[in-house]
Length: 530
Image (cartoon, rainbow, N blue to C red; front, side, top):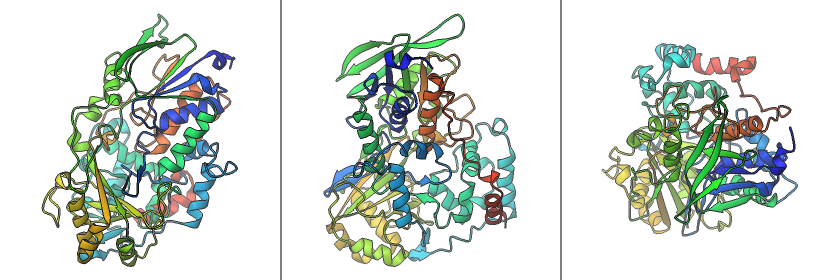
């Protein structure tokens, strides 16, 4: 590699984990001067979907990413570089490892049935036909599966099993989602088959992921000189193609504080463009109001991809992912509790201390509601006498079992009523409500990356002939890897940086293949087919 990075500038469109990881790899692996790296973000805060904030009046996270030890090779590679905010001698990776050693996950109430009965989640309930259908899906090439849905490959019994209830709520699958994505998840996380009922393979951060990952990563980047520009929306990108097929980004069209602007790129500059957004147009409710469902793509991430996709046939097809909000949406909620009463009752029911139980799913819930009780504190600065829990519902258009209205129309207070009903704790509702704030969040595109698709709907990270640009995020194509994971965004960022800068001497960690390990393969076969 030449001294090009010392003259080059890199423009990273979007401030999510993919862009932040790309910036880190530019510095760490590519020798890029930090002050030549520009992160252009529309929102006032970086981190994208990895968010978390608020105060004792009401904390909120839109989602929670459950990290995984074996599969997240690129993420761990990144976080080994990044020091924590509390101790510069300890990396974020080390902090996560130490935290999970102290607070290991061992869910004792993974599934809860009617009457707040703890179900035997170790009984997966798969019969011979279910196993045959699962095997068939695993054997089919993706080109044969195509845009078909999960429900096209399984009989009704499969969807009633404990196995499917746990798998779908761990990863947020709907029956109408892409069968290709399910196959990839089976192959990527097959090591979880034997421990799915305890979720002991889950790795969590000490605080929410914004405080534990994004803030240290941003601090490291800023210390290295990286320039963050907020309030900047990139609306379009101009490309040129030379006779030899080489393509370049030449111009970024921007809006700064609502005013149009244009930025020209030189021959030595780079552009890293994040496409789409799973948390675009998120809307917040309150104790007294339900969150709105925004359908008109106000967020710039989707509009930018649509503008780019119109310029070349291999830049993807965003309509495959943002064209059906009703098949992509679900709703989450965060409880902020200024009394330990509810927490203590959940501990008694579940047998888990906060931070050790992972997901609890109400199998018979009309909303298919799940909740997580994190270790406290879960937010930076959270007072000792304030507690939080997070939950979500997959079937948000169904009427609740206890409030008689869809989750999508429910206020935070009504969601609390539904939750307490499933926990069998309606007797303490008045006391809990008096000291609890519930913030629901509607997410129109949260599982859009699982939409049924063909092989050409997502563009490659490095398109054909791309000399100075790459695509980032959940809506690019990385063969064999799985979307809706932090690992996917980080792997794509590493691939983009290493390829564009010609870093052949820097090896990208391989994609973990659980069946390549005979011992893992044996335990998987026993769990799924025994």
